Amino acid sequence: MDRRPIGVFDSGLGGLTAVRELSRLLPGEEIIYFGDTGRVPYGSRSRETITKYARQDVAFLRTFDLKAIVIACGTVSTTALEVLAAENPIPVLGVVAPAAEEAAALTRNGKIGLIGTQASIRTGAYERQIARLAPDAAVSALACPLFVPLVENGRFRPGDKVAEMVAAEYLTPLKEAGVDTLVLGCTHYPLLSAVIGDFMGSGVKLVNTGAACARQVARQMEADGTLAGADGPGVRRYFVSDSVDDFSRLASIFLGEDVAGEVAQVDITIY
Amino acid sequence: MDRRPIGVFDSGLGGLTAVRELSRLLPGEEIIYFGDTGRVPYGSRSRETITKYARQDVAFLRTFDLKAIVIACGTVSTTALEVLAAENPIPVLGVVAPAAEEAAALTRNGKIGLIGTQASIRTGAYERQIARLAPDAAVSALACPLFVPLVENGRFRPGDKVAEMVAAEYLTPLKEAGVDTLVLGCTHYPLLSAVIGDFMGSGVKLVNTGAACARQVARQMEADGTLAGADGPGVRRYFVSDSVDDFSRLASIFLGEDVAGEVAQVDITIY
Image (tube, chains in turn purple, green):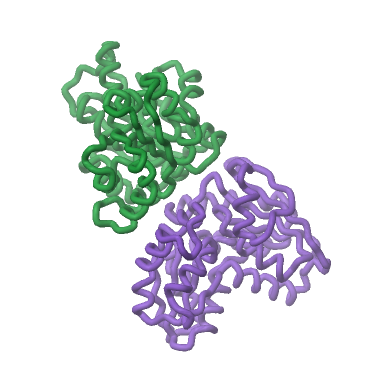
């Protein structure tokens, strides 16, 4: 048993899709979330800048006595996981390995699609993980740079003509490639699940990277005997780098429920 | 005569549309540009964060001995011009007053449209300036939050179906309001001029805020006798807060010509 909190961070609010699943699986865990809303998005920035920002995010979270850190961000997981894991004495878990495992287990025809930010796709991190687990699988990867701005602007519901047109444009090559499994390699993308699913068709399974990561965290903590062992609900604390105004309204969309817990602003540049 | 350089800054590369016009009008001036590419966009952030970032941008530029600072950013001009002008002993010029003057002079039917980022529109700064110059004018203002991501992703040319659909959606209320003049209140938007102009029709005049600001700078320096008095071409130096990779390719789109001059990265958070 380990009652210390789990730290979770993302470039913005997309990582709350992982918090949502963690809360469902492990309601007794205390969770401290940091969203870098003052510098979102990360996916269009350089590797060097993403690494610098991610180090600051982790340094802030580690001002708390944590038992693990979850990188609930596809861009940071693909770009800086090794660096962060090497620099920190507690487990640092990203979304790539759990998502690759789910995709390799789900595919029947060996054709896997992968979408993410420009930064994520250029690393090739998901493809390398999938190749290890399913050497015969063919991975079709592509960047969808307008998906994050669409989600951040609330444009993700079926019936939103712009979201549907952008999805159709991006996803047509993956549909034509005949993928039967599609990795949503960015924690913002699950909000577009209905739009993406409608276009790809019911035969294509979607892998929610934030949820896959949360499930792996739960399994690993159970195996390690580091669960909090409390019935919950565990304390939730949320920190952001821009103003807290509007946080609760936007966050509730990602969490799927009202925000319950402290919300505070932090100057991330001092870490 | 004053041979000191002019400092110009923007959240990203949109402000280069002002540099383009400054270079055309005043080829002999030395220009130092800063684009905060590590933290772009500003238009969706809080007033407090925009002001903090803008102060750092100005503090960096003032490490050079400048004769004036041009805020080539609609979001900063509407949100933080007064603060920056009060804090600095050299002229600090924004895009709001020059664009309002052009709009007031251009309109024939007194119906003026205004588009900008969420942060710009919520300040009401353009409306107040226009109301001073043309008290009878009716201003229809609206935020176009997807325009900056579209431009930053190169989606601004006629024939781009997504850009055309988004423009039609945003601009329909302004077209229905019968505006004859439309202020492009963000320095990214001139790249969308053809798409916007095609939708609004040839009877609607578009005000390019970066260019209007450059023309006012030129007039004011001529009146004050502070032009460099050189034939040019003046030195150009470009600084960005993210990696310089790709800068030249992207910047040339905004400048309308190849980048000629030093390009360097700066850690903006230390200012």
